[in-house]
Image 1 (cartoon, rainbow, N blue to C red):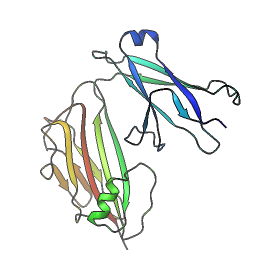
Image 2: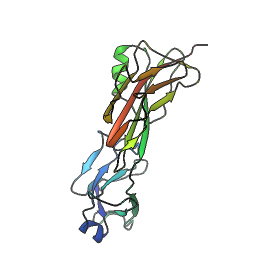
Image 3: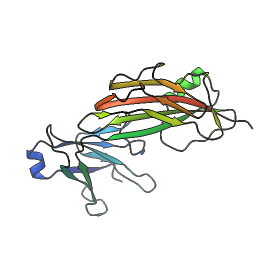
Image 4: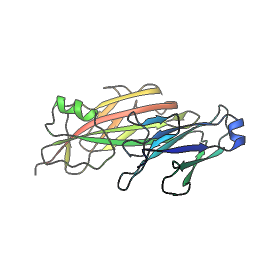
Amino acid sequence: MRSTDTATVTLPAADVTNGWTYALYQDVNGNGVLDSSDTLITNGAVPAATPGNPVYLLVKVFAPGGAAAGATNVATVAVTFPAGSTNCGTPSAQDTTTVVLGQVRMIMTQATNSACNAAGMTTALGALGTAVISAKPGECVVYQVTATNQGTSTVSNLNLSNAIPAYTTLDTSQAPTCASTGISPAFTNPTGLTNASTAVTCGNGTTATTVQPGGTATLTFQVKLNTN
């Protein structure tokens, strides 16, 4: 039984000449998002997929400085198998990257805090993910919403807000938090945080906000499932 396969990424020759590059990762937790649990692949070797145990790959493409808005790159990811293994051909997929001037991507992650206490909050923050979770009435769920400017120019007038889910109540015993990097004026806690019975907002209350490329805003809050 083979233990590894080989993955390769090919960029168009002209794009390589112009400075486009890439990094290939194994998406260890299979959530489709590049995070700290994922493994950088430096030698092309990836674990062999087996029935019921797929292997997920993520390609991160880097555009050269000065790339024009609308410029595209098509990366081809292919997998080959060791000599002597079942001949599955060379399956491949293509990933298209487009340069944009300003694009904000928002990701919401969640985890349970059954006891609704500070220790559980700490544990939940270390277990945030996008997978479906379940909780019982009287238990808590921790949400974290992160907005990132993935474009190549600044974005303005950004505020981050999330509605309190139906049949839950905002749990202020573990205070919501609001923080930012690469944003001016900065989103700070508590001055940039607005709590209400229907929503939580993270911002600075001004339309003069500028978010640099790579800048992020993060809103974290906890809700308690209603018991009746």
